[in-house]
Amino acid sequence: MNVIFDMDGLMFDTERVFVQAWDYAGEQMGIGKAGYMTLKTLGMNISMSKEVWREEFGDRYDEQELRRHTKQFLTEYYASNKVPVKKGLYTLLEYLKNRGAKMAVATSSPRWEVENHLKDAGVYEYFQEIVCGDMIAHSKPDPEIYLKVCALLGIAPEEAYALEDSRNGLLSAHRAGCKAVMVPDLWQPDEEILQIITGKYEDLEQVKAAFEKGRL
Image (cartoon, rainbow, N blue to C red; front, side, top):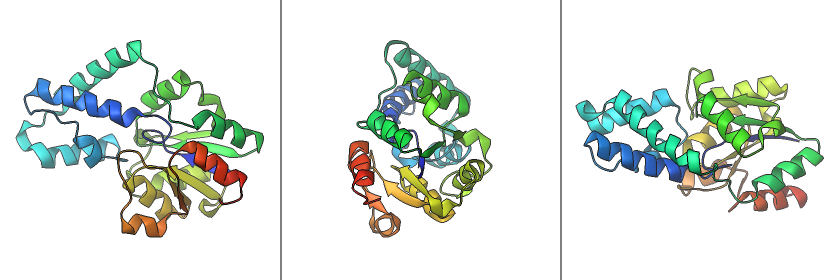
């Protein structure tokens, strides 16, 4: 069995933290609360997200200011809070480990952030490979990240389950040839996504149960 995990919104409840961070950053920049941009950029890496911000705010978008205020908020938040873990993550990882599954992470977040969160949650050692947004040329929904993960694991994409919460992530996994499994977070699937996914589950505990019962 081979299972590839997205990170934000799938393993960790970090997307809601980003809503708060971008609300704060937007107010500091004078463009108003910008937390809603989290939904507009779900699954995108930094490079692709920049384009969406430019389209939304034009000349009022200052990349350096956004980064500075966002980092300030997140640094202060994580100084007093551990990364919020999604329901069922630990039990699913332990179940898959005991089954001898190969596991990897495919996330649009930068490597330093990914390693910090995985280590903070105590799950870093479960994964054989980690591919991040700053390690690829094309962001989700392009299939590059999943093709790269599968190549590193030494498997065909069709042999992998890809756990995702966002439209861009699910499209990326599907286009690569993986079996896309949705665990919704901030975004609910539309008809196009419902047609391409292998399954939809409310949380990672339900994903574990589906594996146990042979539904996946």
